[in-house]
Amino acid sequence: ANESQTLIDDLRDKAPIFEAATGVESIETERLPEPPSDSPSSSPTRGNYQILETYIDSRPTGSYGILFEVKTRPGVGTILVKSLSFITRFEGMVEYEVFTKLGSSAGQHGKFKFFDLIASGRVKGQGPNAFTRVNENDETYNSKTYTGFQSVHIPGDRASRSFYVTIKKVPDGEEQPPILFSYPINEDNEGKPVYEVVTSSPEIEIFEGDGVLEEPFPKDGDSPYYRRPRGFLGVVEYDMAPCFPLVNFTGWPCPYMKLTRSPTPKPTLKPTQNPTGQPTTPPVTEKSSILPTLIINQQESNENAGEANLGSSDAAFVTDELGMNEVPGDLLVKKIDETSSNCTCSWRTHPVSICMLFVLVSILRHL
Image (cartoon, rainbow, N blue to C red):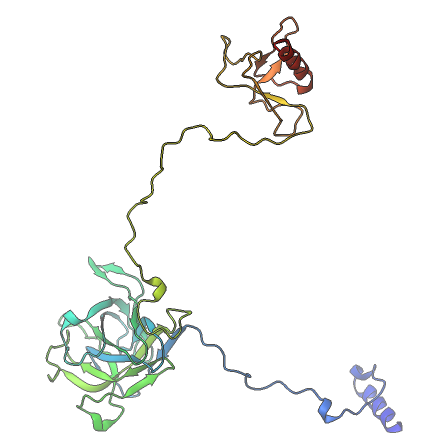
């Protein structure tokens, strides 16, 4: 106890924070709280939108374009490619095109009838140390229309799609911007159609392809205008679950996107008959604790415009729907004529209670 008190006194003298301390207590190791972990207890959830970058080769080569394949991994569902980026040594404006086809491009070099143009445009090159992203939107420049990137799917479970990315030729005398690509991963494969995986994600694999030394790419795949294998340097952006919540769906289109038939240009249903203008059943009225007000049968009229004869048997009594002691000014309300046996209506508004007495008397006289 004396040692504890001595420790407390010593702490109080050294720092004001210990002035409120009254004692020291030992705690077993098991009772100490655990420090926070340096790593999460589970892996973070991956979002649907993914970006897969290929490595930037320290000694890249390059030319007009590259033709390569992207494949989905075994057991993975269909993915949707949303955009592409490439690398060019150029830092000025470049004109590009992106073509694609489902499956392998083997034997179809230069045969545009098998390919679809999914992107074209002009964009500022970002130089050899950054990715140059294709445009998302359509544009027109010098009367030429360019196409913003159109998303394309790759079916799941080891299916593939080929991409041909190229930079257009420039006029003679101007510097030709090249697309950069890497040398073979395995040097023994130089000149052979043997393609290694450049990079991969849990959903897709990007394979080496053919470097293209001419624009547009020649039809003879064995011509000296191709170098193989060469690696695509760039970015593939994709949605890993475009058919969510069907994350393992391997087809296309997504089941709920497919139309069973074309929509009709206009509604097919028409009214069964012209409206009659009158309700088929009388309106339902509610009872009220106040005196009833009078609604005039609009078919009755007399010689005086804006007036109606309340002596007629066609007159009807209903309750005041507004719960008021005065009828709204847009209804015909009774006016008393003490010298006449009839009670007439005018556009003026008066208290109901007095008028209704004379209305009742007038009706009783006709019974």
